[in-house]
Length: 120
Image (cartoon, helix red, strand yellow):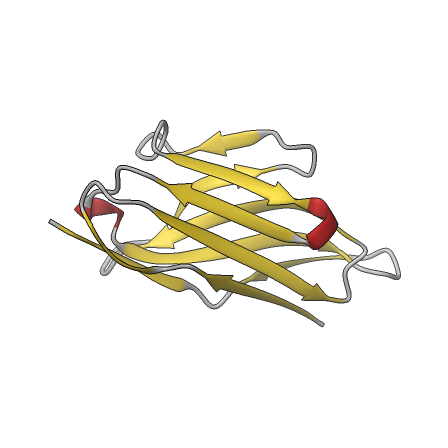
């Protein structure tokens, strides 16, 4: 019913920047909270940043001051601007969204993930 598609991942040198995008489509009335999560090899998935529909943001301590989350409610899209990247930022980054559907019910969705690799 809903697809979340991430893009923008890739290979970058330490100190570089990447911008991730997450586009939602399908049976969507509106989207409440959205977030970026990441999972490094051998580790559990962890929160990177979240943003409410109204634009309030929350960041993991490890990315504060380097990453900026934003969203475009009109186009059901979320972004993650990542600056000053470090090798420890290497992970698969996942988009997450709380979707309100037409018909007034709610479902939480995950994207398929996009790989970010930061070389030292």
